[in-house]
Image (cartoon, rainbow, N blue to C red):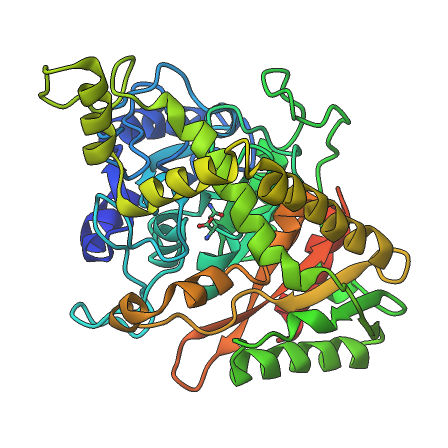
Length: 457
Ligand code: GLN
């Protein structure tokens, strides 16, 4: 009830597309009974959780912030959602996003933009980041304990960074994608947003692990992570790499300084911090965007408004009906990615773009494999700047927006885990963060060091 009350109070931030009041009340009553009988089913029993609106939820609308799916009610729960419910968590609502998770701001939504809570001014607000901006703001406003986002190129870490939260992108395949409406199948992972690393861990422990219904799910049994208290941890001798190529053109001075300060702090705490080189980083963002658009072109083909999805009032021909459904059902970002992706996939362009991007992706992945011979973790910025003002962001050129994923998308291309950790406020009073990346399935050490950082800053 408190959570639902808070959601109503914080409505102006526009974090939620659907508030599941009825379901939440029903679930909460069941939890209360278990509580009275002293039989909680897990650490998350009775805990309010929000889920991004691109995860299927049984009998609850799942819109992807689009006209195309505005009335789509799935018949089943995404595995992530089901596992949370089985653990007794209370779903309080579905959160806002950029349409079909394409974006880094949560402004390209049929539900309107989500607003950052920092330095809030309703007329002149800062963006929340995205595409899981609704999930970030749901947590930041205190309406829920944690929220599920998705992360294809940075969509969980970017809003975590802009909103001052911890944001985890797990290893590809560690958390099931079943019921996560696909953007880029080879890169998508469910992500977690919460206030502290310990909170993230408690959610990860519930949602991670093999799912026979997801063919890309890792079959290795997942061992629950138990982090020691920060005071009992030591990072003496731990090798941490600073990839020089991440010091890129658009990095703001304050983010660069924060990155540097954390590197120095870790060194003072006994870690071995050294510069490393990842020579293919500069090709990463272009390669990501080609592969993204190719997979988008193929994934979006299913939305024709015939089987399901928005159907226009158009009966002159079937072809026309398809076209009108898609013209009205998708926003400009989605349409342009479909067009570009199909262009890259034309027979005459296939080798020139798609095959080449696949090869480059391999090189980027190899850069990470090579670096793990030298260091255990990498420390980089998460976002290049603090959160921009909404009105400034609208003016930014496309190349700026493309570069927003500069530090985050390589982890998706390589499949490795990465976490964004909030550090401090900028001079302007907005959150600044750093990112840690580790090799596949290194979540236990990655999150331990994240917690360590959280405690020394
Ligand atoms: N900003 C990136 C994009 O638009 C990342 C999206 C995501 O991670 N879902 O593709």
